[in-house]
Amino acid sequence: MSIQKVLLIEDEPVLAEIVLESLQSRGFSVLHAATLAEGLKRYYDESPAIIVLDVMLPDGSGFDLARQIRNLDTELPIIFLTSKSLPQDVVDGFESGGNDYLKKPFSLEELIVRIRALLSKGRLIIKQPDANNIALGQFSFKYPKGVLQMMGNEKILTTREAEILHMLILNSNRVLSRNELLITLWGNDDYFSGRSLDVFITKLRHYLKADPSVNILNIRGQGYKLIC
Image (cartoon, rainbow, N blue to C red; front, side, top):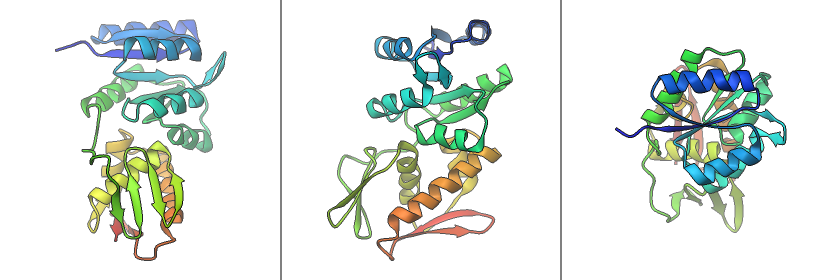
């Protein structure tokens, strides 16, 4: 079994050393960078299996780096590791392309569990269709590019919006549980992830309201059902 590479982008030397040693002791190969620029270079040069990313770095925001990477790679797991803990910070993290969000101070064991959970799902959680458009009522949806089109109007979805819509499409006309969505896409079903999911569902409903035949129903106590 090949050793999986973790790219740790963290500018606090003591914390970085603790995380690095803990991951190495669990059998991971760890690449460390202290800035966005160095992290991006290591991403290009080393092709890590997962990125653990601080948000507040000396040369900018980890959210911006996540967006940049998502333009190149829609599948690479990204875990934010940050002291930014407001609900909007969490939403911003997922909207920028993060798969998980762990607030400082944190448990090293919890970080390792979350890394393993994301890696165990492989490079792609859901089977992708080919590059052709997916018909969705009067819309066409191109995944994984995240392009939603209708009558000449085009909306570019965020990575997370596209992933959620794709899962709903693959499970159209049946109830898709909140827990299934959260565990598959976030790797956990905690309060902050649940609130983020609610935000994304609201946005998707707004995008789809131009076609009354397409609707995302909230099945109370169960989950969501895409009707088309």
